[in-house]
Image (cartoon, rainbow, N blue to C red):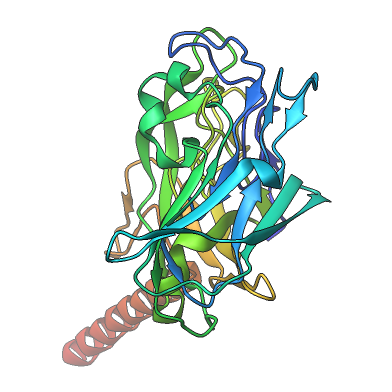
Length: 339
């Protein structure tokens, strides 16, 4: 099947995204001269043999005389506390590079992390306007820090897992909007997907950068103009997504047409020596929110198929073939009985 073009908003940014104009309030999309620092993991667990924490440097005005100041490594703190509540400063190295996704760094501890310690990497500068973001300030990924518990060292994972999808349905979701407020509730015909993680990757789950691909193209939709989506995740969360058909209310976001689409989710594991990349097996879904059609032969085709559409059609063909043979056999018996 030829790839279907995916529409996307001009405001959509990729994995680990931040937004160019955070809002001054929850009711209007004004601008603050600030871009928060983001980390991955921003909370959770981190194996003791990690190579580091991913960091996207933020920007502020009026710091150190710079018109626009980008956070530098010396403005970060890295502290760990053990079970006896003894806190230590962890020396670290932070390398920042320009990438296709913007400025991106890796914070690497210069000393080994101790299993059971609770650690925090934080920005020592003033907060980047999070007090003005309304209820979204409770989202951990917006708090400009990484808090984690050091867990047992584990091998690098060998598989990401499998992709599960619900049946297509009309559902209301929150999308970014350029008119009035920063978000809008929109009804869409969509399929919710979620990764069921392989056991080998569960210890690393908080350090994964998830990306969804639909028909071989990257799927990226923004949930708000003033609040970044969860770092390393989609507009509906980490390790899950919502793939939907565009309509008059989605402002250009979504697929142009419904029907069968192939979805896969990929994940990069930050903090390893290879930033290993893994993917789920491709998974076919049917984006059709009309009522299921029940055929006279008893075969029903509805809105979701994990690479089984051909199997369903084959089953329908076999049922029809058996029905034809039954009719022919009945007719032959009747002819013999009459003769």
